[in-house]
Image (cartoon, rainbow, N blue to C red; front, side, top):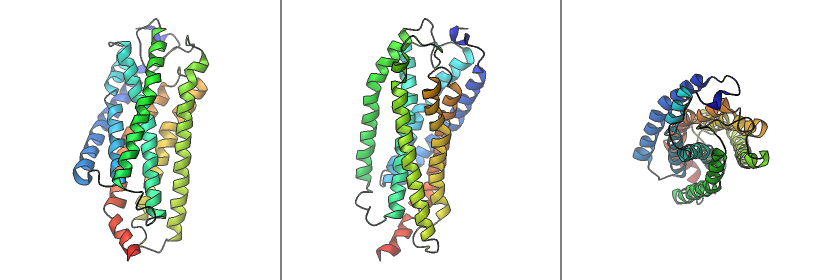
Length: 289
């Protein structure tokens, strides 16, 4: 066993089981969801565009999980440090892209419910494709400095390891937390936007409680926003706070928790399909007449 065990006992086998369960559940759920989205809905609505890209983001995370399972089950890293860097980047990319795409979905639903007519020229598949293109460009640009930072960090370690770092890293604390501050700021900003969207939509639905033509199936509408807030508060927020509070050394349980988001997102697709894609045309027609 390598030196990753030096700082006390850690339930690595438990981590392996958790990541194995996430892999076994998340892979078929997201693959099936992506197939349904592309086959039955294509990229013809902004919601479909955002959800397709959210599913792709989750699948990119899921393909990195087998190596996490192997590492935590055996305590050894069989690949190069460069491979470790790219697998870590897949994980970091998922948190950022998922947070942004989930927020896009909330904003799109906000516009559909609160401003159904005035927002029609904004809520187009073309604009959504441009938005997701900018998101992926942003993710790639962020990977450039991160890739070199992770590479230098791992080169300073005298062990062949991945995913776990010493409690006293050889690099200054300030350097280590630069991206943690950025990621926390991004997550908190996206969370604030989701809270505002949830509040405005809830207020709008209460105002039109007896107007069935306004929005059908109000429960499913609110469940979309509830799922978004649950994903942020349970999966993304604890890790962001943990990085700032504890650094990179004692956050493995929080990483496990964050990875659960790829199993929660398919529920978001289900509620959105029922509440909007099948009934959205019916809800908007009375307003247009």
